[in-house]
Length: 292
Image 1 (cartoon, rainbow, N blue to C red):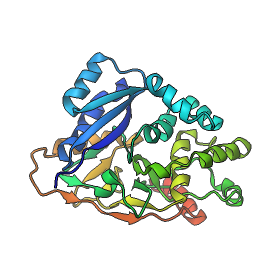
Image 2 (cartoon, helix red, strand yellow):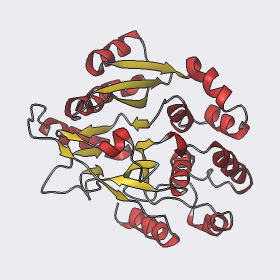
Image 3 (tube, rainbow, N blue to C red):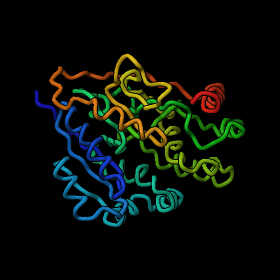
Image 4 (cartoon, rainbow, N blue to C red):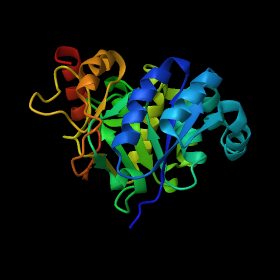
């Protein structure tokens, strides 16, 4: 039976075009189902950039913040804190525009995630009745609140799924609870939960949403964050995320990828993601400080 087209959304600016051509191009080359890409433009892509992306990724469409802003603003009209977060934080596009503008399953992929062999991930591309959220497992607990804030989080009843990496995430329409996000942002106004590490604010909110229902990881052995200390030495994982300071590792891995690979696709399954307990948060902080 022919598989339906999966729409993958991503965020991009001009500085990430070359990276996207390689990484999103690898997803198109190795995913054994038809893909359609929707690029959420940060406003810096020009006609030449768009032409290159269409040539490599077609079918590929573009959505600008301004062009879709009216529709998203209308949907967020009853949620002023959500609207404020969207306007103030670039990653607000990922948190709100991606799921709100998706007709069914919202599938998001960063531009620095490399696919290395033929594969398919049914739960990621189609969703799964077992879980509203599907994501990559992060290498650590990368969330905005500090350990000292944990008692306040517990009093407020705020729980996170452990190690959610929002660079590769898929969620059902029911997974975006705007009432909860509005309330969470209200607590943040009083407690500054998201202010210490604002870069992780959107990922933190996603982790809180994921904890309100079931969340699963894409096979953690085959879908990994690239890091010199943790990459297996005996095989190359099927999916690698070259985030942040690990971006130089891409130059070592990419030349080794065989785009003529004809092996049968590896079907990646999922495993249940636990909640982020205080002990997990402490262990993660120690791991970051002394090992990673």
